[in-house]
View 1: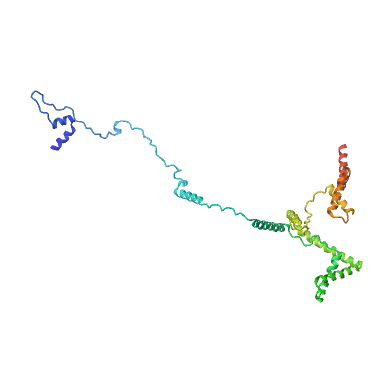
View 2: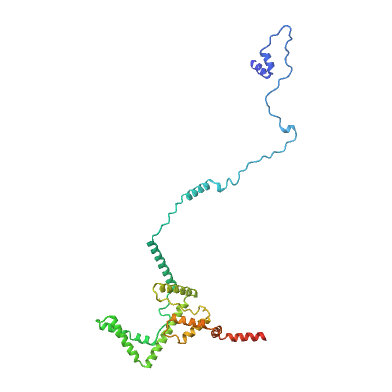
Length: 319
């Protein structure tokens, strides 16, 4: 009973509660206090009625759903990728510093230059190729005559040990030369035939060797041989064993008028017993002293068919 009164008391307004708890002493001339006629109201929130009972249903509200970006889940930002990138950056930072360039002394520089020159000479010799020993097939009747008597030198050396090789070789050469002077024309003709046959065989062998290589290989070999000749001329001051390889497949340059004049003057026999350098200087002076008409004659001698072509071309124009 007491609990109910306390509950009702708390539901009443504050003023009413105060009056009920602390009643004001009444005076004789005052009217009695009336109770409030208003009903007590609840001061706390209560759940509302459902929307179906009120009226039409409201439209559905679309709420934005937060989506995770594809870039966030890509393999580029994955932990494994980040760990790999971190390792790469660490490895790049750990590059050792370049060692300072070693300064060579003069002696070391000379040794290095000598090695480079030796390597270059080896490459040139390799590119120069190695044709048959006697490419031109040089032979003569006297060479064939001495070949048949070469065994005599060995027999003489075995029979007489008291003389050295030079003395025995000199005696053998004098004996062979004396026999060659006394040889008959038939014997000389026989050895000429042997020399000619031997020369043709050597030339055929040389041609087969040249044709076994391409034109470009022969061209490169001739360039290497020219370089070797120049080096030998500068270092030793003499000609060496690097002649140009003769290739008939190679296109020859046309002969100039001066070269034609030079060839004819050398073949005339006027410059015998004169050194090649001096001979060339004299012929060059003669060429410079010629007039333009005389030089033109040398040009027409080089191309004898050219005047006929000019005349035939002129006749066609007049017709």
